[in-house]
Length: 452
Image (cartoon, rainbow, N blue to C red; front, side, top):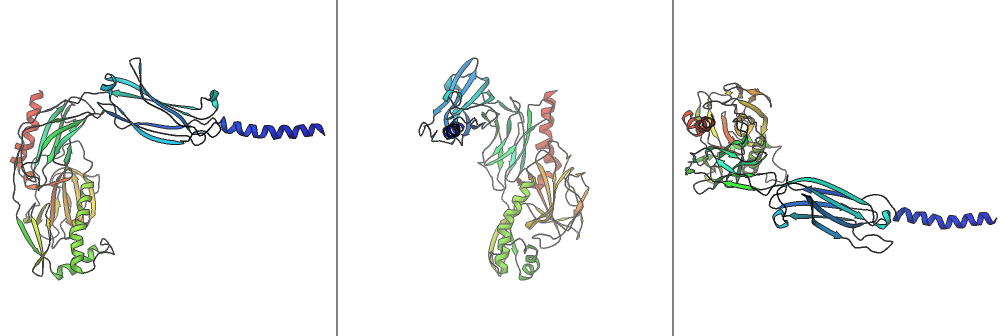
């Protein structure tokens, strides 16, 4: 009887003790994440840190940098305790740490960053569970050097250009900044891998006074800018008046019924305005999405083809004024050239390239987009039929489909567009063999000859 009593007393004492020890001596290490916002640390780098411990709470966090046998403390913090038995008051935290090697007396080269996180467990003689994270980093405080190799850069509004330049560091992201638009450059075309080429463009509304320069940013976040001489010619685009009739609205609006939101105004004119404004914006954004990736090869050669036996019905940059019952209801800018031939005429690829898109796009209707390499694209819209598939390589003159009146087209024609990355440009330049020779090919040949 007495032995049973002692067993019960022991159980009553040991069970809570075991339970307490299981809680206070828990062995789960804290969770931690250490990330670098760039591929290295330049003149100023930033670490992104997060840590958590659900059970006993966070006790201490420290971040140290080791280089050339020297330890530098980047961050340290002790977290408050809510009591001997309660553990820490903070169970999770996230923060950023700025690292400026120059101010810390740290030289360029490889270094090691170590994140240490402890919790309030009673493990390891009350020191707590420990999480270590280590990350090797390259400290590079020197910006890349950029040397522009091409010399003559004359452009008109809505025009294209080519810059060839050399960067001093491999793995550098570089390109041409034109006002608020960035056009990436790519290496690999020349035998010197550090030489890059960038096709760039002026939007139709970017005139004299637009700033243009080459910019480069290395993996550590260091940046450099190189200017070059250029001249921008102002271009005045014509105005065009388009009369919108009830007959046109009754013909065209049903095509967009599934794209006009139910809460949009329902009168025919208001529905047309929604298509001409909002759907137009969405359609242009969709076209731009198809040009986000480009092949680093020049597929085209010589002047681009124009639709055979066609007449120009609308030019690039036309400022269109839409009239209904004698009053102007809208204004838009035409970002291509409308070419009319016989109904359902074959549409040839204007240059060799890769088909990257074949589908309906809002106001443009059935559309084909071809990548000609290095960020140069052509678009073929309002088609009645498409005869190619995405991923297909096409040769200059190869049939893509047939002209039509799909989308916001008032009759059978081809809406032909050219884009440098995400900016529409004037196709007239690319139809001109002399312009291509003077502004594109001669620059490439000049750099090639200089490398021999």
